[in-house]
Amino acid sequence: MASPAAPDHPANPAAGAAPAQEKPSDSYVQSFARGLSVIRAFDTQHPAQTLSEIAQASGLTRAGARRILLTLVGLGYVRADGRLFRLTPKILDLGFAYLTSMPFWNLAEPIMEALSQEVHESCSISVLDGTEIVYVLRVPARKIMTINLSIGSRLPAYCSSMGRVLLAGLPDAELDRVLGASDLRARTDRTITDPAALKDIVAGIRARGWALNDQELEEGLVSLAAPIRNRAGQVIAAINISGQANRTSADEMASNFLPPLLAASEKISNLVSLRT
Image 1 (tube, rainbow, N blue to C red):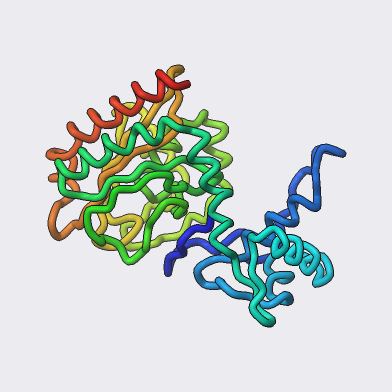
Image 2 (image 1 turned 45 degrees about the vertical axis):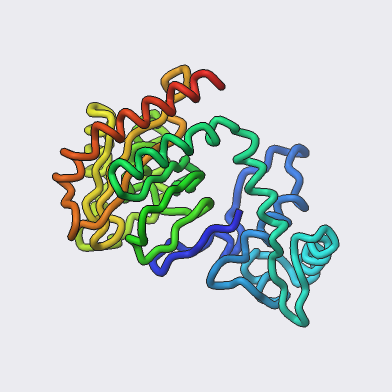
């Protein structure tokens, strides 16, 4: 699913040469991987591109990119408009397959809506994908960010409340790997980027069971997040409440919104336990 881009969003991984990766011998289908790299070359900043631009973004030759694009055109996932190529709405089928394959998210939505109505703030659920979080459900109360968030949007895990909750659910070795692979840059003057400090923050989240983010992701944005667990107690997702610092301070959010947030996360975790 294509993700809306943000002014300060990390660069699309497909925006350069495809990263080297270990190929598990003959089980690795290179042509399929190249097709996915072409799809990932499209984003909000680059919704329509020429063959040369797509080849450069995906790290492919012009001939290779052309074969893949024409295949995608034939399947209805890409549209050719003169020299430009664009994704079609059919591409959403690929992302929607993930959501429909996990039907308990449909059960979580009414709980999120009730939570959003109770606290009068936006509510979201995300999962961890590499160094980023991916939004799988969202109930917006009002526009509170310059970033346009929706299902499929991505944000860095290290400086977001849901991301830190998800990082807290990882084993130490995996946490080190994710932080080591992250682009730990300061998105605001409050952003914590030191790996050791981030590991201390994650340790605190593990101990108390929730995360509070005070304007580290974006100026003026505060958010509170809690884990969603499966039957085995593993953290599989995170739910958050986000609001504006000029209306609700971080301390006020923790004091007033934490009880309903934890109640909602427990309800959803119980639903997940019945389905997994």
